[in-house]
Length: 343
Image 1 (cartoon, rainbow, N blue to C red):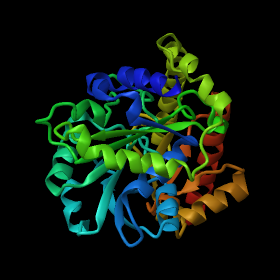
Image 2: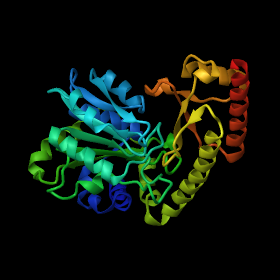
Image 3: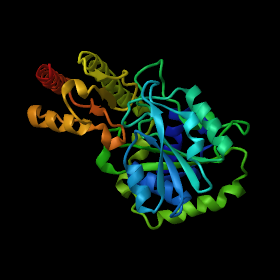
Image 4: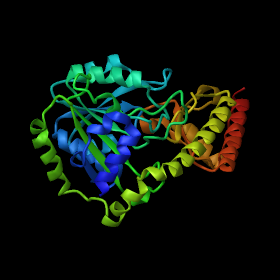
């Protein structure tokens, strides 16, 4: 029942492209983290390599390293909505490159990719015959009708569509339903539509075998999935997204009011990456900026170095409005104080 509920949910979230996904294509995991580990384990051996975004969620590198899999970073463009620099993918690929990892909507960037950009990316991966892992844990958490969320599943439904040989999609309940401690995610397997089921059966069997050595979600949690993911519950999640969108607008305005800060408006998830003019504040690194801000103002940000984006900081805007406003008041005071000292 849990996997059947995921299929119905994915059809609503991902559009017609998910219509060919069945229960046999869904594997329930211990959170999205378990889905990441399962996906990498299923396709890469020790000595192989995978491509992950920079900046990006550090857990991909941690889990790959534990498996003896090399991580290679492809750059995102901060001046173009953190889009993938498509021309920089192929130079990273060799005979042992097994997987391209995408995160959309993005943690830490707060970006949401257009369907046109995703289609261009899929065409590159198809040409390189490179499989895709699309982390869509923030699916449905986009803030603007002008930048809606599009799942890769919506773009690979036709046999003639340019698509990777294998697409795997990560989802879960921790973000949109605000229950991270429940530890329930899923991995959806979507081989290229032109492949016959018999051709992909060994891979599916291998994925199922890997689950026998992994911690899986608790039965009481999976039992509530049909109720949680039911269509009539969509409104509850939409209220959360509407509130995050409102807070994102506040953050964008406050960031724009700090002369040493630069960032585009957050489009999704609950994060934004902000470029900091460190020199204007007399700081030598983003880590120094974050450390001194915490020491002097008790405001905690994450340095961009955590995500391989030096010169940036990540701001989370899921806190109540009054907390965000006070945090920005303190950040403004901190910047004004250090700006004055430099002058």
